[in-house]
Length: 432
Image (cartoon, rainbow, N blue to C red; front, side, top):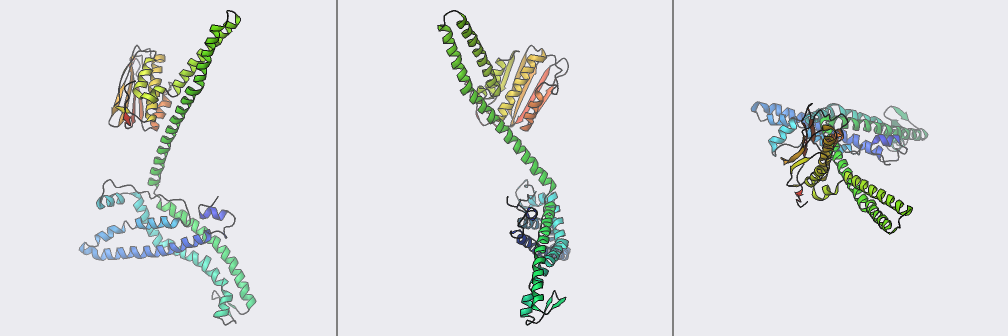
């Protein structure tokens, strides 16, 4: 795998033969240039703004100084690709309104802006001198030692050469020995430069990435990943339902019909009894499979939407259920599935635990939200965390940024409410 940053290249073999040493040199040298330019720019803005502040003309310049970190951080994100290929998010929000005033007030109120200003000051006052010192000690000095034979042949007329202006070399063997020593020092210096560039890149990433913006980005990505998981889960449920309906269920239907015909043709006796028993078992298996398929993802929900599916669930409920659900269009598939299974679980609990004589399912779509209410006149005392099955449904609703609430005082009545933000996708098919 190709290294993504200097640290990975340093820990692997072949570092000196890779482009990373020279990328490190380029990163540190451009850091020196950038630091000098930032120092000159900040000093110029402060000096000119301070002088002109007496006539109020310099106040805008002083205000601009507070935003000097924005272009500096942009340049640093671009430079950072020399030492680290991973992208760096900027952490700035989008202004609420168009225009320079809205942009300025948004940027001044952000933590990332002041964080980048602090980084610009640190770069101008401390970081670039350190980078210049590291490049001088780890690159220029070894190169000077390597160039000893060249200096002896040119400047010293073949008789002598000074190494780093400290040692005098007067013989060619000593000059070439210095060159070999310089090559060894250059190899060591390239490792030092890689280490310095890696540390500098990590420091830059730490200082210019806003913790607030990074957390916001992570929350958005987690939300999107949860939605993708829900969509994938629903697609898989529909696939399983379709495979069972079109495959195993049809084979069981054919088997049941074949056993029925064989039962009619068989003469009375043990064989007819066995065929009758097999025919009954096949019928039971078919009924169980149909119930299983319906529980995985009911076809009426996929074909006709939530209204028809809730009406179907109400017809199959052990307790009489009144349905007053009005939806002018279809909802997203994940929303329909979550709402349907919440209603089914609530009606199942009504039939098992409430002792109710009647239940009611009502709701609709209002203000960009699906509203559902399941009400019964039972004994109450229901607990969503008491093993009723509503805990998992509440988690499923929360994935869609929805909310499930339960009100069930002792003695009743019980009211289960669901709110899920969503938009209508298409007109409802009321022919169901």
